[in-house]
Image (cartoon, rainbow, N blue to C red):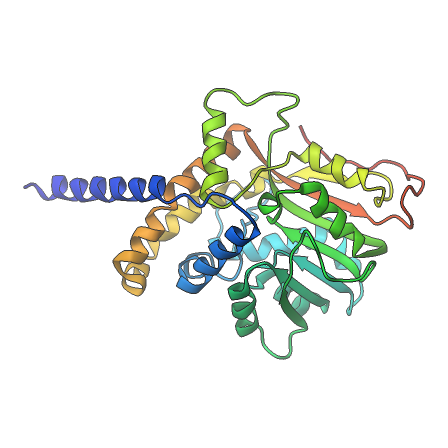
Amino acid sequence: MNPLLWGLSIALLLLVVGLVVYLLTPRTYKSGDSVAQSYDDWTMDGILEFYWGEHIHLGHYGSPPRRKNFIQSKHDFVHEMVKWGGLDKLPRGTKILDVGCGIGGSSRILARDYGFDVTGITISPQQVKRAQELTPADIDAKFQVNDALNLTFADESFDVVWSIEAGPHMPDKARYGQEMLRVLKTGGTLVVADWNQRDDRRKPLNWWERPVMRQLLDQWAHPSFSSIEGFSEQLEATGLVNGRVTTTDWTQETLPAWLDSIWQGLVRPQGIIKFGFVGFIKSLREVPTFALMRLAFGAGLCRFGMFKAERAATPGAPARAAVSEQTV
């Protein structure tokens, strides 16, 4: 057989195998346990960390976006979020809660580069274990298993509550917002980055968007995505927000990360040697989801929302002048 045809045949076969595995092994959300199990599995096999590094979130590619190292873009995301949230003006020793900390990449940057006292929480015991392994003793970041919908911390325990891309795993978005604001000190800052769906109250999902969104939920243990507008309303409805929630849209700044995620498998073939055939198939099964994410965010079905709020002194405190950077 012609070598070119042989290569194309192998590629097609692998594509079919990956698609079959993808369709036959959904990670449909059932409970918090199903989320914890998914992250335990990803952490123990090491594949996600190998390709994505210590940060299990998208990267920031600038505005306008430009070519950038995939891992560096994730570090840059943390620093951009710090600046956007105004946290770079806070003193060393500021107490921060990192909700959905993963294996601690963001927590370590916040502690090492800004001198903050960071507590990272995740629902995954294996992520806590790995975060502790990766954190040097001289970095003021500690980690524990905790449920974001039922935080074990006392009211007003932290100066800042920080969360990146944890919201889609929360079945009760209002409770998620309530709990983060509850443990935030009066005058403290909530800063959240999240994957969001377009507000379907204004523009319902069409014939192709509904099945795409279904796959994005089922493949990565997501019960639902909120909209930027909807989650802002839920935060304000707690009565714990001083004034209005500030929002902006970082879709364009983060969009290149989806195709870069696929590209990592091509430019780092040593992963095949490290993880073997089973690991290769596990990696291959994620490609359709990355591609659908790129489609959804590129076509306006999904948006990358940024949220910032100040904790009110008491429920129902008088609102200050509204602040909004929200883009439509």
